Image 1 (cartoon, helix red, strand yellow):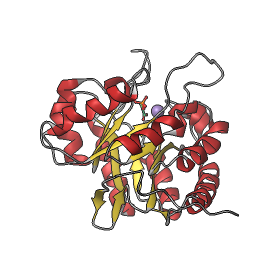
Image 2 (spheres, helix red, strand yellow):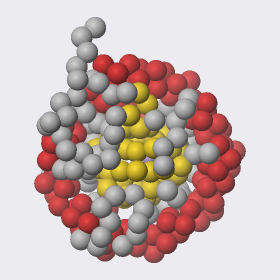
Image 3 (spheres, helix red, strand yellow):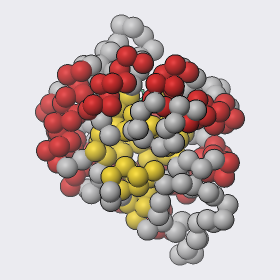
Image 4 (cartoon, protein in one colour):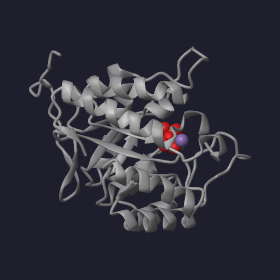
Length: 273
Ligand code: PEP
Ligand code: MN
């Protein structure tokens, strides 16, 4: 197999240190995985145990959920944050979770290691200013109808308040097809890497909306230069309270890890973190 070296001259990524021994945007590809929503201690623990066994270091899970319908489950709130922290600490994991509003920022800062800004909030400027005043890494998802320029300008709203620990995340944009939930914009991954100093993640779960497309999309994101992946995993996707259609089972996630590791090595990365 031909091995490609990453063209380091083309990118100017400044790694974001998450823990003393873990950075996003360095040589390793970093996986962040977990359920769309924190539903219970048992559900979150089952995922965390499997992640830990695969060597994954960062647990994701939503406690404050941006749901299209106000009649859908809105998240466990503070209780969800407490579950995430307790489970992560049990397995020595780090936590990423979404702050949906300015009022959630102090709680997320207290319980999580990375603050996620959701796609619907990419231009919620008061929220960007609020996370810009913290010292936590911020994962900024691309708005599903935002241009790459708008996405990169949104990062300046964060840096304008002093926080330079930014990780971008391409999570799919709205297109005309109805067969998938969104369209993974691999152009955006490559271009954001060239045009900005921020590490870029791919989210194959929201980009496709279909569990059967998550692994191919994950491979594509890493091949396009993504520094890591944000992936939804659930012990029983058919019973998930949100995004079950796109959530991988634990065995499927372990297949993803195996395949992504091989693609990462083929594009000159040193492995998975
Ligand atoms: C999520 O990560 O579960 C989420 C709500 O993502 P997005 O903001 O990309 O829709
Ligand atoms: Mn989700």
